[in-house]
Image 1 (tube, helix red, strand yellow):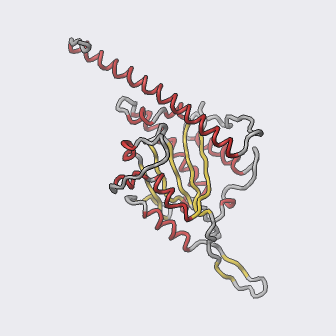
Image 2 (cartoon, helix red, strand yellow; image 1 turned 60 degrees about the vertical axis):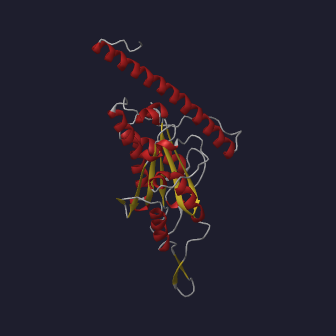
Image 3 (spheres, one colour; image 1 turned 30 degrees about the horizontal axis):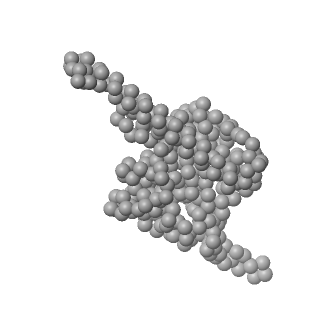
Length: 277
């Protein structure tokens, strides 16, 4: 069975443009804009293979420029904020979204690299098409899950990345509840520990993936973190993930080389040619 990773964080309006430039870099590439990124694992020559989409009112629309995402976000925020009732007069007034509000939830969705294999393997012609389809189906099943959590109307944009070691999806949603409030707790309850809203959300994601045929561990692969701060734990997990991805990439490259040699030997035998000479 395999594990799964899905992390999320709140983003203020002032930081959205920088986030989009990084996560939707394939759009800039299509517009002839070259940007430098601090992530050393990005392979620029593969950025054009990333796949970005966005939604308006729950329906997928064509996405050709990153400014479309910002325009749609601002359109949603213009009517968000909720209302306040004056207890003395009964008057109801609109409350604007606070400037420091985290108006976007940024999610990183990744399946087990042991299942997906590396991006390099998925993009290689020798990768079985059935495997590509299975990986793609499971990745987008994670997006479907968050469409249920936040509501399809709150899906903003997503980008599948193939220009890094392992395939994954960056998903942006707007946490605007039925009362027009920008409030994450309306969707995933606050709290810590195994009974927190995030922990329950994680288990629900795993059950969802099991339902679409992904052979998932129904419980996270736990470890004691009592001696680590949140920042230290994050760095530790990032380092472990990077090491696992490098090991998987090396295995996939060895596999691809073996496949090419086998194909070459088959061709040699069929044609009666000594390819080594």
